[in-house]
Length: 282
Image (cartoon, rainbow, N blue to C red; front, side, top):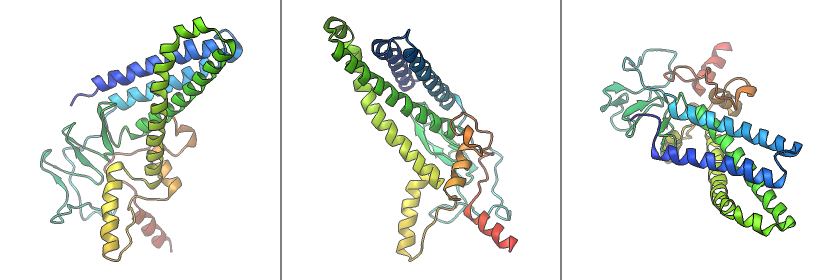
């Protein structure tokens, strides 16, 4: 599957352009005035948020999510790799019949992209791309800025409507009524849906899980409880270390589209690494 333009991407791009235009040239202009200091400050601030939103959206679309190298071969005798994922049936090392290659830990085959994706989270139609190891952070940061932009625009919309009702300019208000209605119908559900999505991925990051691993973990937890055991996600390093693993070691880079820290997507730190390190130091 080719990354880039698709109908769903065109819909998102059109919504971004429409919301930006209405926010700056209608809501801010009618409430604060674009020539006032307050209007200029809000226009600049919203433009900055919108720019970061669009930048991260473009990166999420065009960035390679991370393909499994054709030369990858699991080494079961490597002492530095304490975990080897196996098939639920048979117990063999995971091998993709469609790609004719072994799957590294956390990799899965995407039926849409028709490739195995490193640390695959899900395939997103809104970016016409998989969300995987190499573009997960920019996808997450895009959602962060999208939530900020939607809530910011919604606040400005309400403020503009309140100002219009006080000024009682009926003829002027009627000419912008369609823009207000469409913006409200877009911003309210988008704010709710994107906030839920953001909360979901914050939860996943704090657990160092992907969406696929969450659903697999539910089944693993059920099987463990059935056998009288306790299941623990092997890649859970603790909340702060999970954050730095996904978003980067510097807190100042967490909301920037920088992913130099992520590694090759073949080898991941696990809770067993910490256990072996602590036992060695004793």
